[in-house]
Structures are given as C-alpha cells and as structure tokens.
Amino acid sequence: MRKLLIAFALAASAATGAIAQSGPQPIERRVGRLEQEMRAVQRRVFPGGQPGVVEPEIRPIAPAGPTSDVSGDALASLAERVDALEAQLRSITGQVEEQGHRTRQLEAQLTQLRADLGGRLDRLEQNAPAVNPAPPIPAGPAPAAPAADDPAAAPSGATDPAEEAYNAGYRLWAAQNFAEAQRALNTAATRYPNSRWTSWMRNLQGRAYLDDDKPATAARIFLDNYQNNPRGERAADSLYFLGQALTRLNRRPEACRVYDELAQVYPNMRDYIRTRLPQARTDARCGAGGGNAR
Image (cartoon, rainbow, N blue to C red):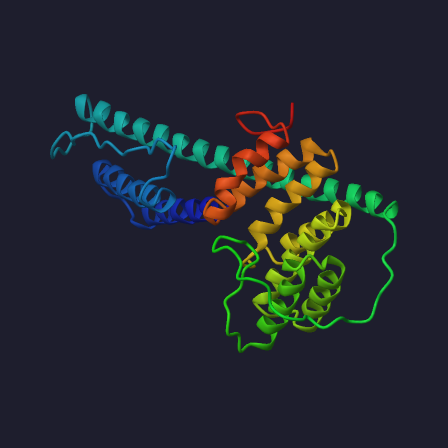
C-alpha cells in the first residue's frame, strides 16, 4: 500500500508541475488538464479496480464553451468542476489510507502471533524429556504405496540425492519408526538446506514427532519450517499441522489464530489441507466466523 501512496504522490506532483510550467492559459484548459491528470492517478491507484473497494469515477462537467470572459455561468461551472475534482481526490486518498491502516494492523497481528507462539513453545520444550541420539538405522524395505492425497507422499524413482534422502525418511515414518524417521529427516534437512525437498523434510520431521506423541517439539519444527521457508512447498502444510499440535497441547486459541493465518496467507492451499481445515477448526473450538476459540 505504501507503493500506491508513493505512486499517487508522484502523479499528483507531476500534475501540479505541468500546470505550473504551462504558463498563463485559459482557466478551462487548466481545469481540463487537471481532470486528465486525475484520471491518470485513478488508473494508477486502482488498476482494473479492486475487489470490495468502490472505485471513484471522474465525472467531468461539460465546459461552458469558448468565451473570452470567464464570469457568470462559466465561472460557476468551472468552480463546480474544481470542487468535484477535490472531492474525488479526498475520496481516493481516504481509501488508500484506510487500506494502508488495515494492512499495518494485519502485519502487526501476525508478528505478535509468531512471537507469542515462539515464547510458549520454548517454555513447553523446557519441560519435554530429552531424546538421546542413536546410531542410524537402515531404511529397510519400502512399505506399501501411500494414498494419493497423503501430504507426505513423494514421487517414486527419485534421482535427486535430496529427494532420495526424503524418501528414506518417509519410508521410516510410514513404517511407524518415528524416532528413526526424526533423526533421518533432520540429518537430510541439515545436509540439503537449499533443496526444494527441505520444506518436505522439515514438515515430515514435525509429523514424526506429532505421531510420536511429542506435540511441543513438533510445533516448534512446524513453526520454524513455516517462518524460515514460507514459500516452501510444504509451508502451508506445516501451518496446518502446527494448529493440530497446538490443539493437542490444549492451546486452542492459538490454534484458531494459526488456522486464520493459514487461510489468509495461503488462500490457494492444497485440497488435502483445504478439505480438512473445517474439521480442524471444529476440533479447536474456533468460532464460526474465525478468530479465537470459544
């Protein structure tokens, strides 16, 4: 929204400069020029219109016709045109400022949500039992093929080493060897931090902890995967499963806020998540219209 305000200011400055440099001109021509500049501002601030915003329209008043004496009806007509332009300018400015205010409020709420979750998860993890490291265990034979809509499923026949590492961790998780899957996926994500599969690895690592009845640790992993790689292919999944972990921890208000953020940040989330979100909100006792749990 700040870009819109800057664009608006530049266009308005250009309009003022053009009028100032044009020298003495008939007042009708100057008002007509101002109307043209206002249309340019309108097109720039409202390109193609905005959903939910009533787009102001420039409605020029017909000129009074050529005259050498600007007085009487001609002067009144020009005054009306200037008044209309000023009113439309105020309307555009007000809408831009209102949208900017709403955007700043949303950003502040999301920042506060992330800070609150981080602090609470830190406290929960302090009370969680430590997990002793163990030597790596071979993946063993692959289990039956996962369901087509399984969020952890990966394509077969991988040739990318990172994808192969993810598939090895997936096989452990699918066989319910959760502790081994946790270690294997953490090692793989550390080894391939810049791969597209890192988002998959961290998300499945969090699921391995969640399925191992360790929701506090799982919540930390899901939150980190979302925050550190919000454009990752499983960032939306991690936000969804973060809500699941918080519900398990009886942190229902926070879970509802997470589900709200999921809907706002990822409106094009995968169908697997979209179809399960209503039940997740019900389990967290979220209000029908969104927001905190009842």
